Amino acid sequence: MTDSKPEGELTLRTLAMPADANAAGDIFGGWVMSQMDLACGIRGAERAGGRVVTAAVNAMSFEKPMHVGDTLSVYTNITRLGRTSMTLKVEAWAQRYLTNTMVKVTEATFVMVAFDENGKPTPIPKDVP
Image 1 (cartoon, rainbow, N blue to C red):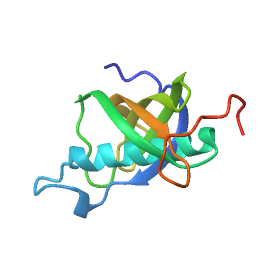
Image 2 (image 1 turned 180 degrees about the vertical axis):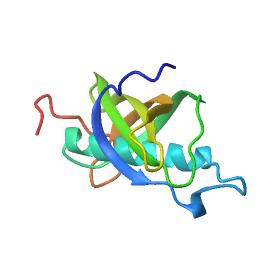
Image 3 (image 1 turned 135 degrees about the vertical axis):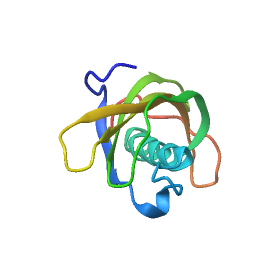
């Protein structure tokens, strides 16, 4: 992964805190993945006009570490829209503490499914709400 420029829409931005790290100050990969999942939930719900759930996460590998104090920025891009599901390309970038340096930490593909109020898959509107 090259540290060029984020692709997609900035969907979530948050600060990595000591409770999110191991004893060496490296942020847990699970915390980063959780933030990516939150971003997909936000973007997916906006596009579906309602509730979405995570159906799959594909091909995630961590290229750079995050550290306590870094700001995590998660970018999402809807790459496929099905009848009840959507696929999002997700990138996680770290802005190093007290600098303007941005590095790509990881990227993945998430599949989200739209659900109705009864917990059943429901069609996603063709037009953006």
